[in-house]
Structure formats: structure tokens, C-alpha cells
Amino acid sequence: MDYKPLDLNKTYLITGVAGFIGHFLAKKLLDQGCTVIGIDNMNSYYDVNLKIARLDLLYPYDKFTFLKCDISNKKELFNVYEEYRPNVVFNLAAQAGVRYSLENPDAYIQSNIVGFTNILEACRMHPVDHLIYASSSSVYGSNKKVPFEETDSVDHPVSLYAATKKSNELIAHTYSHLYGIPATGLRFFTVYGPMGRPDMAYFGFTDKYFKSEPIHIYNNKDFDNDLYRDFTYIDDIVLGIERLISVPPQEDVPHTVYNIGNNNPEKLMNFIHELENALTQALNREVSFNKVYEPMKPGDVPATYASTDKLFKAINFKPETSIKNGLSNFANWYVDYYKKL
Image (spheres, rainbow, N blue to C red):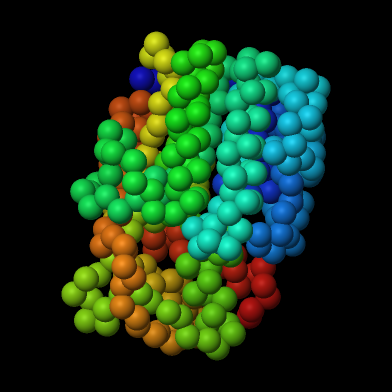
């Protein structure tokens, strides 16, 4: 199916606009002249200054409006829909992170379940052309079959975060069935790049290097059980989302999910080596992490990566940015942003 150019007469609502993916999607739409309404609750799950810095890059656009709003506040959210009447909605607001869900489960229920249901209710009351929402590769749980395909069973999540994302897919399907809401869920696979999330491993490894602290790698030092992961660069993610805007599901129940990943799994150790090389180039000095190896954790899956056949068939697209180029862009941004030269 062919995608169409963006309709500049439509209004695009992005929740989680101060987040990593939300920011880059907003910038992509604004660069093409779209009207973008962005909302975010600006929580402190990670450094709020980074969220502010992302927003500061969006404020100069005349067609950008930012509203501080929490999607779990139904009244606030409905007010946004009533005032701005969005045609296309991207729900990227969510409580992220797997380990944090062990410490603060309430945050996941409020944002990922209550908040997402509010989004669907708002789309029911104020019909939209297309709702595109963030799911996650974590829904695949401990599946051992790779690559992961959208038709695989996702009935055994291994974290509360994953369970809430699986719930999003079920609730969205139900609303599409009952009310005809055209909805597409995107199972993201390890998104990385400049201005990324500080709780992600590549960002944390870089932080630890500058603090002269070791990085902990849950892998055997002889790499007999090397981990493979799908690392997907932010620009590829945003381009995929953009192309999907004009391709809402056409089935009787207008709901579908897509993997959006690199389909080119990298060894974790190769990824770390490329990050060292990228920082070496950015700093113009040799960078080598102090590595502490620990056994793979119970439940760790040796390989996780996406089949992107369904996405390619829908929009003739699959990510292509190499980790060398992607990590180089991240390293250059990090060194500049944190003034590490």
C-alpha cells in the first residue's frame, strides 16, 4: 500500500511531546508545515532539563502549541480535544522502563492504562482519522522464536510495563471493534539516538564513562551466549510513523500492530564497541569502557529482533541507519550538550 504526503490542513496531536520519540516526530511534522499540538506532563522519571531542551527546539515553530497536560486527567485531556479537534493522534505518552515498574507500579497503571483509555475515550467522543500509539517489543516477553512476528503469541509478559503495553493493544482493538476507531499500535525495538532517554543502556554507559565508573554487562566474558538486540535509530522510527499516518487499518475491525525495528540484530558487544569508537571520534582521544561482566540474568533472551515484513508491505519501508552512523550522531550530541570537550 502506498503512503500519501502529509495533509497540511489537518491538526496533529502528539502526547508525550517532550519525550524522545515525541520530540523528533513533532519536529518532523513541523518542518513540513503541519499544525502540531503537543502535550506532556513533564514528570521527573528522568532529567526534566532534557525534556525542556527538546521543547525549546520546538517553540520557534509558529504552528506548534504546547500544553502541560497529563493524559490520566480525563477532564484536561477532553478539553484539549474539544478546543483543538485533532485529526490524527499519536499517543507516545507512557510510563517507560522495566525496572522502575518494580518500584512504582502505580505510575504504570495511571499513565499506561488509565491514560491510554482516556485517549481512546476522547477519540470516541471526538472521532479522528487515525490513532497511532506506542506499544513495545517487550510484549514478546520470553519468546525464544526469532525474529519476532506480529502473529506470535504475546500472552506471557515478564514485566508490568510489558503487561500494560499488551493491555493497550487489547483495549485499542476493543474500541476499534465497538466504535470503529482506526488505530495502529507500534512495537518499538530499542530506539536510540541524540537527545535520547537517559535510562537507556547506551546513554547510561556514556554517563558512567565520564564519571570514571565501570559499566556492568550481563553477558559471559567469553561471549558463548552473546546477546543480540535490535537497535533502531530515531530518524528511522519517525520516518516509519510518518508514512503510516495515511495508512489506517482497513479491516472490519480497524486495528493493527506493527513491529518497527531494525531487522538487523547486533551483538551487544559490537554495539558497545561501536559506542566506544563513536566517543573516541567525538572526543579525539581513545575511549575504552571499564567493563564488569556478570552472568546473564534468568529470563534474559539471547536474541530479540523484529520481523519488519508486515511494515514493509504496508509502507514499503524498513529502517536502514547503521549503528556506526547512529551512535556517531549520539556521541557528537552528548559531548556538545554536556560540554565534555
